[in-house]
Image 1 (cartoon, rainbow, N blue to C red):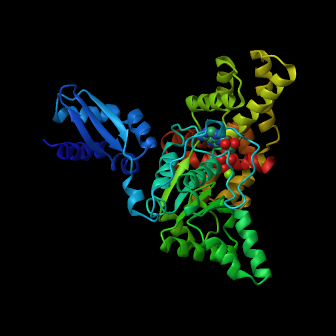
Image 2 (image 1 turned 90 degrees about the horizontal axis):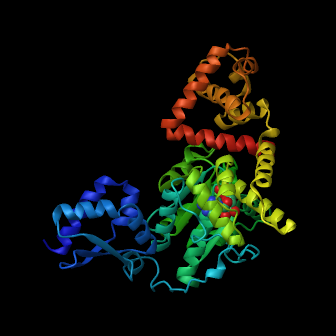
Image 3 (image 1 turned 135 degrees about the horizontal axis):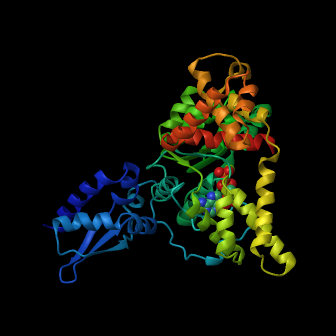
Length: 459
Ligand code: ADP
Ligand code: MG
């Protein structure tokens, strides 16, 4: 069997074993370059160093098994980065990306300001973005974009709760593209508030043309927290036209939101369907291992070490977001500098406990009810009343679940709050949701987002 046939067959096989985006992003563009029969080693060329790490980490075993099913003499795969990714040759930019030497000191420089031209902040990089199960798809898609700008996943829509790394990730895409292609690519990052402000002041000053130009004369447009544009008619319209203009010219569009396009309230359908037409990826809450990795990473950036016990304590107590983890680390760091000595576990525990208690102390049942009603766009009265409409039943069950889960209220108490319902109904609802979120990813994501909103409403 020649190398090409062998690899084609292997690809056909692995394609069945991994998810489609995973396959397309990492594996498809690989090649079998060489086979050393005496050593039993094959060399596989992959698109970039991310792909290399990824495949080595996640798929090496599978690939080896498949290869060995065709040729038993193979005992190891070596991976190399193909020096010229196909995508770059054929698309958008005429020259090859500039290879820049990594500057290790770049990471962790917190005080640099955003670049006035791109609005990108240098602290947001791929290098200091910890990848784990909660964000690996989002990261995969993001890094794929940097080699196939505008043509691979367009638009890229990243969604997830607050403080989970959306801004970091989408700015890192921008920074990576600037690093690769230097000033041959114009990147622009804006928050959606800024976009809305620009539209409003352009209308007022009758300078729509300037505004249009500003947003259409770019190769990569990144808009953060797009949910805020929902319902602002003029801005939605402008965004729609900007979107089309960019999209038609294969310019890359990257959007973030705290929820999927389908859940952004009062978003015009035509805009929603544009957003849904590209790649949608979510970022969920980090699991324990990932939290540990983040803690290690963040403390190393600051040049100190908390030790395993304290790291474990943070990772197991803090559930809400990466931002919260950063907050605690800053506190501990501050404390250590202040005291001039290492922190013992007891002190650390106290600091962590105070911080986590504060975060739920000022949430009350009304916040929860109000937030859920807003999220599902139903009235609070409907929730309290006896309505059995489907649109109301699920939000009501979610409220019952959250009152128990977030506030630890008793079942009868919850029943009272919600129009004097029987406590057995509450128990039933609580258990139903608690079970369902372990299998229904969509519902789980919704609950996480609503929790974030509840927390946000109070702070
Ligand atoms: P969001 O935009 O989703 O609200 P951010 O991107 O602002 O969240 O992230 C909050 C903070 O947590 C930032 O300081 C960011 O650098 C950090 N952060 C989030 N996710 C990660 C990650 N996976 N690795 C490292 N830092 C992260
Ligand atoms: Mg953000």
